Length: 446
Image (cartoon, rainbow, N blue to C red):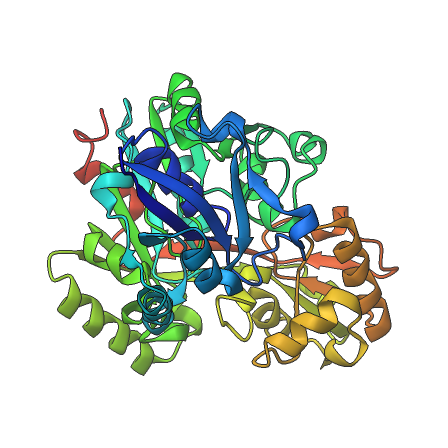
């Protein structure tokens, strides 16, 4: 029997999900390798320490697991492994980026493919409210938090399911369940994972994540009568949604039409939420709204503010260093976030530029992302990187650190000065999330 030989281009998330749902049990295909995108926090692995998708997850057809190789070797892998089809399986990249990948695959002699939502979305036994976005950093989690709280207030048993961020032992991370902050400590999760999980846990909502989302779904729906999907980056939901809300960001007007698979989310949305209007230019809000209405005229539009609060007395008149959500600044291309807005709102005397004192991995981040100006991304994918973060902050010698990352950074770093946490919550203007739930009560099992 001749099987189609497949190479999956990924970044430790959607690629594994596509494999598990589409290819793992498909006798007509053989997945010969994954590739890992550059800058995806998987470490600088060489051939001797090659990461593998483990056999415990890959299944009986792959007793040795599947190698995960650097994306820069794409052409060589296609040639050496006689690859028939390259499957693109990661998110928050420009349409141009996707077609450059396609051109590389085609020139190497392979077909190029993207798995569609009907193939990769799983059917849940309970209703699903999905919150997604057109780019990372639009405010998905604050929206998912509000949906979870509203549903709980209506007497529902709510579980939040997050998109995967499996940077450690993949077999051990097949299904992850977090109920308390201590669970995060015990799980040795990264700062990026804390940014996404911690605010849900603080509000009493159980969070599931992992690698094998069929197994995640089995566990999550066993203790919930409604699931809230809190998507990562601008990825599609892994579960078929009964209500699909997609966020757009007027601070990056036009991005809603230029990134994959964010535009797909926009076209699939039941509701499109334009967030952060209180800090955006009116012209940019109008541009985004026009793009939404032209692209998905059936979607209802929610206008919303992202309200920012912090201990203003601790910030006023101080020399501050601002730390922001890492992914939003790096592959999200945002020059700043809620931390800088809070520092300005509460009257910081001076915003310290962290770049001159950046060390180690943070030095490399500034070299790679030249749009960063006067803010520090909260990178922390290893103990070494957390120490680099601490050293960079200490070198800047601020009086106060203003932390715009969604988790409590002060629990993880010791920098000798106060760390002021910035919080931000969704405030709808024209159409509330409660009203949205009322409109869809029957579909959500009420």
